Length: 521
Image (tube, rainbow, N blue to C red):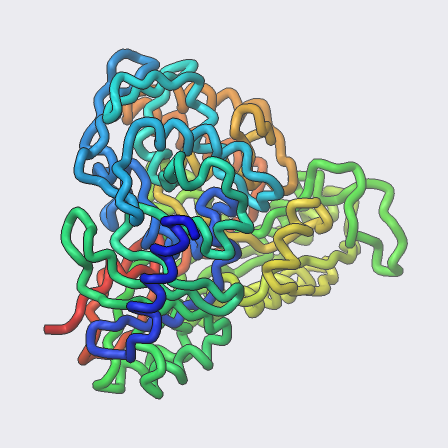
């Protein structure tokens, strides 16, 4: 039996059967992680869960600041070289020290993970060379000036070269190689159900306050609320608007809420001459893809009453979104006008585009992935239908939906994005798809706009914050004039918890993590 296997068995025997106590935290979350491999799927629920066990070099705080994590600091050596100094007190859960070799191994592994539905490659592609200065210092070289490297590295959790050299995604999912540097140690993973963790008593900042952490996926909003009220969990995320009044009136419950750095949008495929699920009203194929016409995309955007959508449909748990980048995002363009709610104007645009009687379409989306996603998709379908675009709605479980969206099986789908950096939002969602450059990693409809790409080339090489944000704001104007995506709302993130047990720091990045929870004293 290997040392690593003995370590895992001993930990499970020592901590796995501990009863629920005051310092045992039980989370009820809306989605289950799709994998324990920290480089397999760039998904919020995966990242926020795995960051208990694994850590990046740098960290994005709740207020958006980038701070050291495994790195103790960094500096710019020249326009294309960053030097990172590693903390010397970091130990993996098996006792081995963190070295520069582990970081070099990790950065090389990220682009090689097979079958990923959402790669992390965007965050490492700017790195064209790595120089090891010593065991705790390394220099990362980029092809051109690149100001976002410390921020990008917040997304890359660092592995152990010794433990993970030949590890597969299946090895992580089995728990065999779940050895990180984080404040919690891995106990077990039940796919689509739960993750169990235990405090790391040897953590460099001291043992965390929770002895054990149970992260349980409860996908139905009502079931999560019922579990909290019954005392089966201590805290739940993604509180629906329909539960707010009840929770506010219950003295046993405490709420924590914050506007999220989020965007919910519809993504039309205007890139192909023919697309699936678009026909005339008799079900016959159309001679051309109507979504390729910006007038059609703009008409669909104008059909939606975003204020009613946010206030009534989502019961105040969202704000209207009129561009991709919200007010708290770097690069937000305050000069862009709001998208008008104008059904009559939308019908005129359809007629100008050659569709006076509209057409028929089926729109798709995940279910249970973001708050009220199925309800939002139904509402979008009703708005489209009112201007003559007869719309059917199909929702699918996320494990079915995302591979199909990536394979371009849909003409239009509902998506979401969370992030405070406008450059990353545009680079991931709308720059021309290029695995070599790490661009368009989530550009599932393969939108392409040379003007946008040119602006992003310049922005990503601009070290001056003010000048870069002007370029990003101009890029935002370009994509909104083209209505590349149809923004819907920016959501709020709300957690509910037992008032006698948990206090929580809400995150605009919608993180549900034990590190943001504190026992009530």
